[in-house]
Length: 315
Image 1 (cartoon, helix red, strand yellow):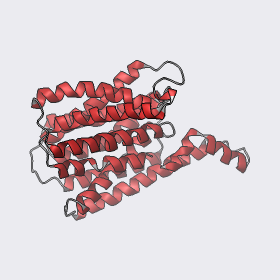
Image 2 (image 1 turned 90 degrees about the vertical axis):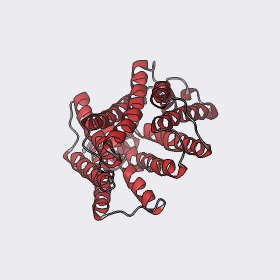
Image 3 (image 1 turned 30 degrees about the vertical axis):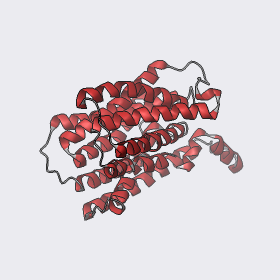
């Protein structure tokens, strides 16, 4: 599910590039959050499930919902601002690359248990590969911007915190309920920020189609998948598996937009794929270890199947 979400996220840049619209980056990100919020509301209404709106395991901690919404808004706003200052290649490398590392450190602080050596190996490989892919496409030649770097690091941190909060919230309510509330908060924060940055928007027809696509598909469907997956895997693993996003973006940029990748980009592609596979293997290994070794083989299989971590097989 996380890899499917990452594949959808990877189409965002191509959709925006093909639109050739008039929206600023801030308005594009803010309207994406608005459309996604509407999608989550319609999804919750269409399913006719009580759990789509109400907590199912006790009162929903609204402080966590508010925090998740703030993190999602900061992630969007800081990323676009940071990329504008540092350039697409370097900014993307710092934002996407720092996310898994932030998540690993934060998860260790919360659970007081470091991820396995295999997880770190796969994460470092995926982050390094993603950085190589992003930097290989950076032809803008912009100078080093420390404020831009700080914004990109803040973007990666906010995404990691959002994932950790989401991991906690899905214990109380459905993925649709959590994403509806969190994205609603994020949209309320992002709209005035976009207005301050770019004034009133002047969208053209291409903008409407692009915003509808990224709002429904790359935010709505993708984050439903991502939130549901966090019921079964660790937050740190979820952030690392999301490194599949630049692989899809790279492939689409080559096949659809006609970009010509260099040797550095191809090497980074291989590293990302290898790193993601190592992280998947580490998660599966951890899931198997949860089944007591003293149980018979059939009992261990049954325990693994019923364990929430076993759903990592879906990745």
